[in-house]
Structure formats: C-alpha cells, structure tokens
Image (tube, rainbow, N blue to C red; front, side, top):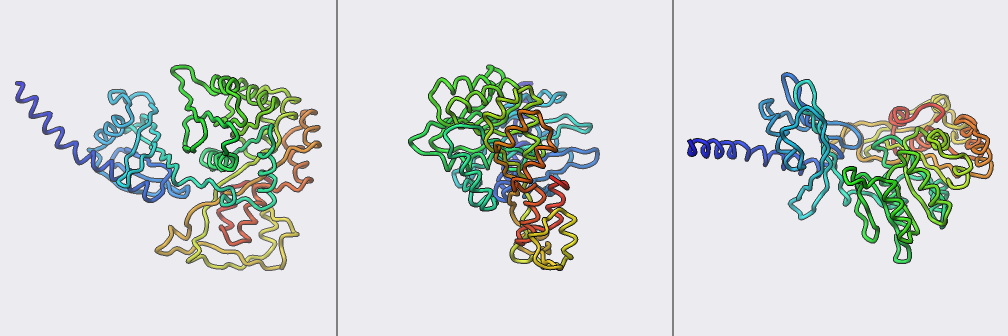
Length: 405
C-alpha cells in the first residue's frame, strides 16, 4: 500500500514537471515582451492566457482545459496561497528569477468564476520603470510647473488618474529627481512597485495592522523631509498627510479622480476641512496613458481643422484649415501600428484664486473654469497636442479622455 502511494506521488511529480516549466516559460515570455499583467482564464470549453502590453490585452496561449487546476495550484504554491481554498478570492506575491539573474516581484490575485479560478499576475519590474521626468511625456510648461512644486520644502503634490495610468511611475520619477544624500525620503505603498536606492520603503500589511496611517505616524517621528503615500484612501490618512504637508514636509500621493479640479472636491467629500486643503495642496496632476504610433509605419492623414476643434483643441493651436495628423498601419516592429506608451497630463497649480474657491466650497465645474482661465489644459487638450505632434492617434486620445476634461 505504501509502495502504491509512493508510485502515485512519483507519477504526480512527473505530470507536474511540465506545468512547472510551462508557468516559468509564460512568465519569462511576459517579462521579455514587457507585459504588465498576465490573465489565466478558465471557460466552459476552453482555457486561455492573455497578457497586457501597452495597455491592450493579447492572447498568449491556449493550454488544454484539463490543465486549469494544475496551473492554478502551481501559481498559488509560488505565491504562498491556500491551494485548497477555491471559493474565496486570495491575494499573494511571489518572486520570479530570470535567466539573466534579475529577480522580479509579482503580485497575484485569484477570483472564483463559474468554471474555475481566474488568476491575474501583475509584473512589477523596477528595471523597466522610466524614472526620468523628461521622458514621461510632460509638455515643457507643465514640467516646469511640476518641478517647481516638488522643489518646495513643504506642501502636498497629488497625482490622480485611474488604475494603470502610470501614477506610481510619475511619483517615483519625482522622487528620483529629489533623491540626494541630504534628504530623508520615506514611502508607504501597497505594495512597493519600484525599488529605489536611498529611499526608505514600507509595504502596507493588513494582518499586523501596518496601515497607511500607522506608517505615516511612524515616519513623522523619524525626521523625514519627503513623504510618499501610495494612495490617500481614507480620512485618517488624508488628515495625517495634510498635517505633514503643513508642518514642513513635502508630501507626494495619489487619488482616484477623473481630473485635477475634482481632486479638491474629492478631498472635501472625504471629510477633510476646506481650510486644510487650501493651505496644504500646492499642485495636482491628472494623467492618462496612450499608445504611441510606431515611428516606422505611421501614416499621415489629412483632417479638416473643424474635426479637431470639435474634439476640444483650442483654435490658437491650429495653423491651417487642413491639419496633417498620423494614424496606425502595422509592421513587423510593432503591434497594429503602435509601440510603447506615453503620458498625457493636466498639471494644475493651486493658485491663490483656487484656494479662495476651495474655502468657499466651490464645485468641480467652477474649479475647472478657474483652471482654464489660468491656462491649465484639460486632459483632452493635452492629448490633442500629442496628436498634432504625431506621437499618437486621434482615436487613442478620444478613447482615453472625455470631452471637456
């Protein structure tokens, strides 16, 4: 009976070996292709693996449906999750050792679906992170505004946008510029996505009670100059961060809002006092990522200027009745005419006039009108500039932004 059990274990190990190698190959291929996420998706009659490259999901493989449980178990073992628990979502992390010696952090999420567990693996590759502000896509005037704000010894700079819009990379590009031996920089994130030498980084941990607020309080007792909070999620974190910004610290953080003006309203709706918002927030930048046209195959397209005017481009940026823009074609050096992504940004300093509006509890629309009077572009206008420069297509900008914002 013991021999039979041993034989079954040996057979299982032999059957599992190809799965182990297969998962490793998928992960290495995803990293090589600079994918941000992998999706393992079971359906009733088939199974597929997709990866997200430049913000777009692409089918990577279609393993046999019979392998779904083995693939799920292998990934859960690597990320130290409960392989017996298939009824509830789980979150975990694991390390990927690459053939070139690199070690990457991967974040794993499981979700029970009708036909098995869907798993999503997020690749956190610090080596691929672009930490030069000059190469993120900021217009010169916006870059000057942002640089001036983060050079101040105190105040709060907020980056806003949806998940996957590059907020963390923008914050770390700021930190990289400020990171010198003369300053004490600390960050708290969930999780730390980019490792930067010379910065004290902390991961939020729910079980022992290490929340954003707890870590922030601890930071303030360690003589910091610059604090970076991965996300302002609740009133307690917001109040501590604002207190830090008012007491001689530079605070960088993120919020999930659609544009820069609505961020001020969001903070107020969270319960933060208007006078604290006005006194602490110095600049807000909203951002999106759009795909770049392939420089090898992009094709010029003649558009009437009225089309761009209707889309939201100011008249003073148009030089003729017919404007040349570019569209995707596709070649062996790109994917459907696109290669890589760039940011479009709305950079809004909080001026004295804006502070007065905040103190009067003005709404998003009134704040947005004031921002326009001060020369702040909307995200749509910033994207249309990239269209005129031939960086991206009109369709990309229209898909990533909404009219008037």
